[in-house]
Image 1 (cartoon, helix red, strand yellow):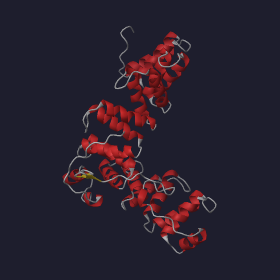
Image 2: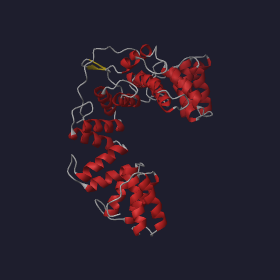
Image 3: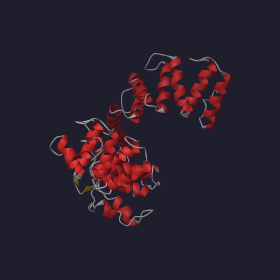
Image 4: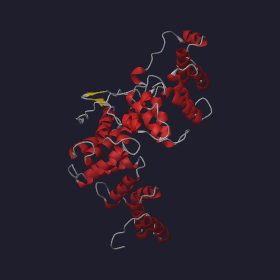
Amino acid sequence: MRTKPTPKRNEAKLRAAADIFASASGGPNEATRSALSISIASGDKQIGIVRAQKATPCSSGRGENEAPRPAGGIEQLIHAAEQGDAEAQRTLGEAYAEGSGVVKNTRRAVELYRLAAEQGDAEAQMCLALALYEGNGCRKNRKEAQKWFKLAADQNHPGAAFAHGRALTLGDGVECDKYKAAKYYYIGTMGGNVAATKLMGMMLMQGDVIEQDKEQAVILWQRAADADDAKSHFYLAMAYRNGDGVERSLSKAIEHLTSGAQLGDDEAQLFLGRSYFWGNGVATDKVAACELYRLSAEQGNAEAQSNFGACLHDGEGIALDEKAAVRWFRKAAEQGYPPAQYNLAASLDHGSGVARDAKEAAKWYKLAEESGFEFPPDE
């Protein structure tokens, strides 16, 4: 059973994001910080986060607000589009993008999205932005993509708000501005975008851009987790493990690690694997631990790769296979993970699962040492 923290009481009323940020330029003033940190719950009544449902190829998070396609066949749709109907233009564009009722033509889809977008259709603006961002049916242009993401986001399109917020966070096609990013994550959160909800929770937990509110962060992560967001389960597990925003509970941490791992989050798989390996919060089960390490390792998690290599090297929870161990040590070492660099060096030094190579061993020992890895006493 998933756990839900008690919402924090907050008498401040929710305001429209546009009003909240009307005076924000550059760094946040006190009003901006205060507005960003208000509870997404008002008293005991929480505002629900709707699970995003992609009704069209490019809705990306509009969910229940998605407008239905007009009734009628393709001929009627073409006629309406030619008459300048924005919804028909966008819907016909989607048909061309999918090859639904017409021959697939992504270039024609983009032309139609642009016609509708220029009339202010937020969903078409989102579709056009995605096409420009990915170079699908047109030349890739991330700067122009952000123009259209922003226009859609400013009309409270949740998916566009997340996309533009993410770009502002990373400086992808726009100048990096985490304060403005918070504005758009807020819009996305209020519109039900799960990814925006998760990142808004992270900002509230960290408190380096907006006022810290750990309890509210947990509430947002719970909502995203209820929509089966794997990473939010991991974040909740860490909150319960550390007592951040909730009462510390190892059992609830394990519940969320299990949910996150089942949904495929590599960090949840790694941490749950550790728990099974050392018997922390669960009964020791090294077979389960190794399997979880393997799942995480196959997703590229360096620590999991190193841990899985160690299981193979020692034959703990899995059949001993020194050659396979070396392969995993190398994968993690090449990502700069110091324990794996040491393990690879030791394998090369002693000819364990690989031909002895003192020169290469010295290289990896040196890299591990430079990374601050503390060698075992007998080295």
